[in-house]
Amino acid sequence: MVIKKMPTIDQMLCFAIYSAGHAFTRFYKPRLDALDLTYPQYLVFLVLWEKDDITVKTMGERLFLDSGTITPLVKRLEARGLVSRERDKVDERQVRIKLTDEGRGMEAKALAIPLAVVEGTGGSLESIDALRQELDALRERLDAAVR
Image (cartoon, rainbow, N blue to C red; front, top):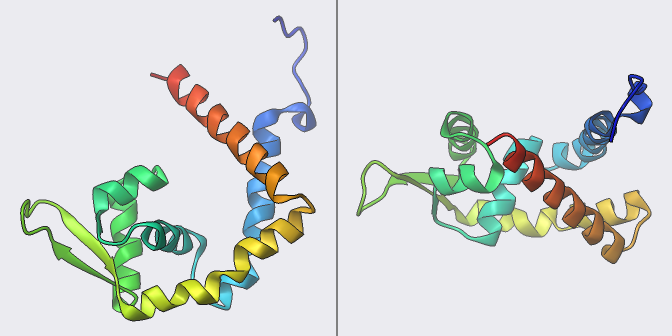
């Protein structure tokens, strides 16, 4: 494939994904404000609601973030009593993150958010899942291209 002319910004895939990300941020903001969470904090909860009691390293791998980004997020949630952090008993270099009862209880309050996303996109669960799978595959191909 040969590109002979610079595409316009509206023709760029990266800009479509970037601007869709901003639209998601605007969409999520009032819903997360009601829970007093930022989007990155919400992502931490999504991971912990899926599997509680994990290491900071595992959290970073799931969210594609480094520990320097995860640690301040988790510390703020810990200060609010929503999660706890403790050194791993087997490997003290590792810090484990666990939901508190209050943090676990937030899941029921947050359940309306993914339902609102389905409604907000106007898509079906199937079409949303297909798009997510395409984006996951795109991320994987791009990651492989930079290795």
